[in-house]
Length: 101
Image (cartoon, rainbow, N blue to C red; front, top):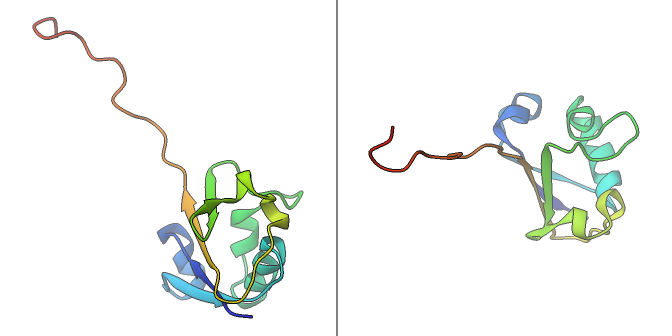
């Protein structure tokens, strides 16, 4: 079962600078565990000590947020695509009205 995994830049040093790798697993949790065997350290960067996905990462299976699915227990099948995306926080914030800044 081949599953394509899109790897964010901060994790690419663990995947030999590859932006995409392939892995296997019947669930997202199994996929991450299997990836960790080939690319040590990946799982600990994506999951906390309890095996739950870290809050500051967004993970998608075929463009669906796994937080809206079964999270680590999300079922996977051959040909699925998993994207790991660091969350981006911040924004413009409040701006003063024109002429007051």
